[in-house]
Every structure is written in C-alpha cells, then in structure tokens.
Length: 192
Image (cartoon, rainbow, N blue to C red; front, top):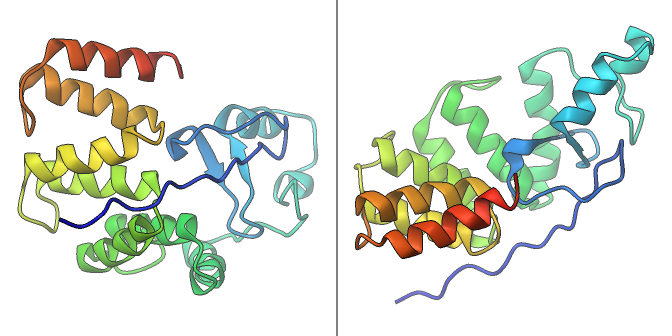
C-alpha cells in the first residue's frame, strides 16, 4: 500500500480580521493575486461597507486590482501553480471541473487535484472525493469517496468530517457505525 499524503498545514489568517482561517476552503476565499485568504463573512462586510468601488476591487493584502474575468483569475492562479502551491492546484482543478475561465475538463481537474493531494491538500481530497461520489469524470466509487473524505477529515476539514459521518450512518463505502458517525459530526459541528 502507498503511504498517505503528508499533512497540509497552512496556518492562514484572514487578511481582513486577522483571525485564523479553517482548513475547509468552503468557508473562505483565496486571493489569486497574493495567495492570502479572507473569510466569506469578512468579504461580505467589505462589499457592504462604504468604501469606494475602486477600493473594493483591490486586494486588501497586496493592493493588486482583482481580475475582471474568470480568465484573468486563471492567469493569476497559473503563476502559483507554476510555483507548486497546492492551494492553487486545487483552485485550478475546480476551475476545470466547472469550466470557469478554462474549458470544462474533468481530466484536467483530476490531474490538478492529484498534484495537490500529493502535497497533502485536504481541500483537493474533499473535492476529488465528491467527484468519486457522483461519478464525475471517474467511475463512481463510494469506497474511494470514503477514503478521500477520511484523509481530509483527519486534517480537520469540516465538510469532509460531516460527509464521512453521513457515510458511516448509511454504511456507504464504509462499515456502518453510528458511533463513528456521531464522533465525526461532533468534530464538524465544533467548527460551526
């Protein structure tokens, strides 16, 4: 058997409120200009503020102007991908999965998810798990889904903890266990 990917520790802080960001990238936005992160609620507060549109259209960290198109965002991402940043590989994989700024391609998405997984990125593990769960670009496999959710859950990914808990409730891809499900649901709930 192959060894699990390394743990992925970023220890990011929000560039607006300076609080620590969670592992689950579904709760924050990543800025492709400088690689920093920002809580979704902080982003909403900035958008609702009295700052000028010009100020809102600039990164709060590096002051670069946000790209106005998906293609411009992908161009910024590729700079980070070329530097081997796992978060950028995962984000680019998402762009391919949904066809945002690039032609939709599950094959390319899987390639970039796997690059990030090799570096231990739990968000790539989570996103690839969902592809296996629904059979998007891969043969549907609840066993592979559960394996990837488990890798991400072990690194504190709340969405993976919840989804793996649900798999244990229903016995999909894992042996049914209400005890294990409750443990995972509690971990996810403790993160909000």
